[in-house]
Image (cartoon, rainbow, N blue to C red; front, side, top):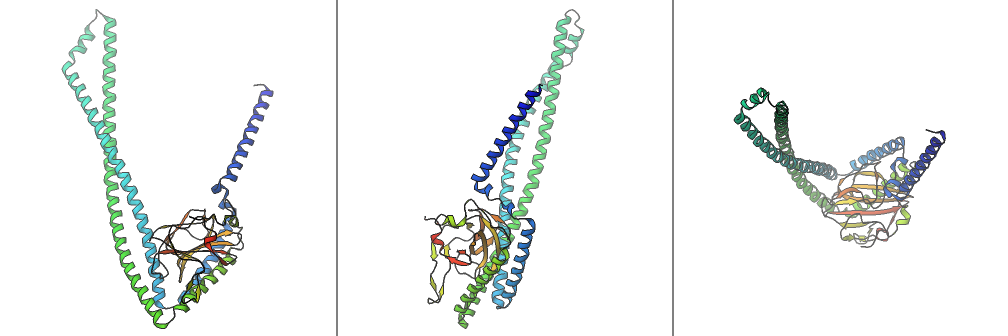
Length: 395
């Protein structure tokens, strides 16, 4: 190759690499998911966040210990229910996957059996033909010295027939071996499926028992609070605890670089998706308990187990049970903005996890001692509550 041609090829390669780089940068800029890279936070920073969150968990446990045994029973029962629901969901997915695989194996078994039957039928015909012809014809060909060319052709034909028959026998045996393996896997996976179904039924029975236990605890707790006339005090205490938690969370995340999604959170006013589809049961600013408590968020009607979605990209900074709000998840969106999701049945994310807008972060429920399934949703800016309706897109 001439030196000039080599230099030309190198220039062409450099131009192609430059173009590829520009295309990649363009994709990163225009792709919301790729642009929202969670790698902007180091492992050390995440570990520091988790350490701070663990301190918050200890603080919450101590604060919860100050309350009645009924409230502590409620927490332990709802935690147990959440764990069982998660395991049941995992078991159900595993059972569905096993059933899907078994269906595929049975289809493969039928196909192999049909193929094996066809191969066996063809081999039987070959064996009958070989038996009918016997060895006499082959010997006659060998002894025929008058037509050597014809003898050569016939010998090649016989060799071809024998080789073909041998190949067909090997194919038959290969199909039979494959069928045996498939049948063995069907038996193994069938046994596993039965075990999973049994485990699923056991956990469903445990869940029913825990749900009944929770109903009794909630009823007793309501009667206890009503008997002492502490309804207002409880609501005020729950609200104060949430404020203290948000202050602590804000301090914990101050060292982290702000998360970035496709668009800064302030630019999403009036455009955010709903965290869950449902009727608004209680609006922001609603007056509770004879106008003595003001709601700082929305209560949205939801079915038990319905998926809850993040309204915008960010980092999970809290995911745990909080008295009065049940399983609460808080996402930091940067620029001082946070979204809060309470009353959840289960949490799908952990502190430090990065989430994108629309991602499933929890399932709705009635934890925290609530009587009705729903999602409690707040948006905060610098710790102050905002009306979520002015931020969520109209529907």
